[in-house]
Length: 340
Image (cartoon, rainbow, N blue to C red):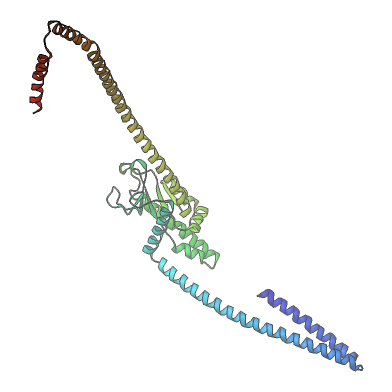
């Protein structure tokens, strides 16, 4: 908008300069009627151009007024929203819920599932303390985490109008952070008997606030680390949970590998028994086959030789075949009786 105003102003100045030059020429050459006619025509064109410039300036002023009105409406709405948000966050309980919600967003982003990878508000071994979150680790280990949002003095520091007020509220904010970390230390969040890790997390759900703590509250951070308290922001919490997720995946793969190896050992034992039993059955089949071949060969021939001699004696003595038929019929009677 500013550039357009400058261009229009330059054009207006150019037309004004041309008008002055033409008027001077008109005064100097007033004796020539033909020149008067030409100059009059040119002056008319200049007037028309200046009228168009004035109209454009008026249109531009109207548009600027409309845009200013829309901008004022948007600023009013934004101020109302900011005031409402500030009133909401002025409540300590609401700020805590806000921090917990942001932490859960990070959990879902990393792929964690409640009651599978983490729990909320689970009472620790002392029976009194309840961390906001308990992250479930491999081998039944646990990592506790609290969400802290010391916003009041930080907002006063951001909105301070003087250097003295800014420094005062900055010191108050750092003091608030130290108090919140000491509150966590005083609870039973680190307890080897409860199978917890040796550290506890304190979640700061605001990146600018977290970076300010790192830059201007180094002694608070060092004190927290000495007490095994790790401050983390949404980004650093995402990095920590990524490492934990990788450890969980590796542990699951390791457990699956152990189970597979155990099943392979069982399969090996069963396979050994199967092969031994199969070899035994094969040997029995070989013995049965050998016995069958002996019956069909040697034993059969040994029995056929006496039968052949008996047949020869029968024929030599002229015994008729009827007796043979009677013998066969008599021999078949027991078989028929058995069948009936």
